[in-house]
Image 1 (cartoon, rainbow, N blue to C red):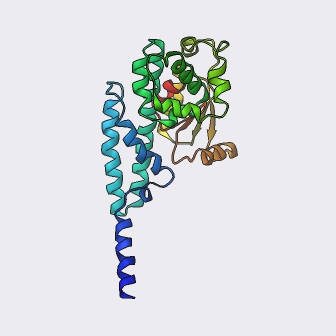
Image 2: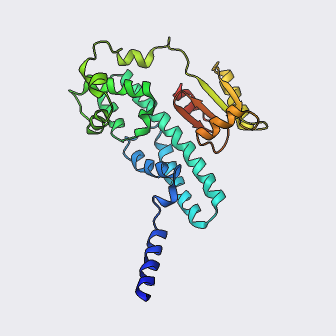
Image 3: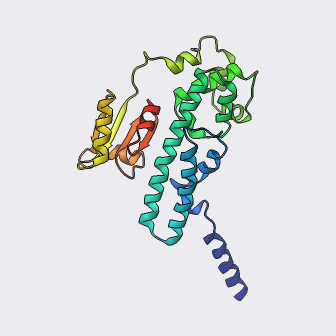
Length: 252
């Protein structure tokens, strides 16, 4: 009995000291994993400072959890998630620029970081896959090869017949495409919500605004996208948490 107690006690201590995945359930787990992927990205002026800040904030979030202050920990996760979305948006912009400049080496160096979240948006995924296949003879990526082959209908969509696929460069720069649907989730007396509305109006970006307190549609969307605060902006397949000009423009 004494031995059993010691075994249970030792196991409890071991798991209590494990920061992953217990500390980052649901929202936290992908944020924890992202730090490792961000470290694989080539250094760029556009996002490197954000990645350094992300690494620091992640460590601080772990310390906050250890202190037992759940409210502060949740706030730290929200801040980390906002920074995560900003970095993803900036990396996506760099990848699109690499395609526009027809620089496959630069494109692959960004892809090889293994940021799966980039390919959740169908139009961007297709753009990336098509450009990669076009240049695979020059530079190959085992990450993209494995990811593409895991797609249902991969051979038909991306390999068997590409004669009728739009040129990737024209896809990235086609200004005749309609604007993506923009949905803003807000609440009254929210200063950042008002700043978001002013920014969208100033940039002539049409949007639909839902109040998360009085609108049933707003409440439903807020729950669906695991909202933790407002403003929450939904652009196509992307969700931007908090007012972030770069992320908004990058998602359009």
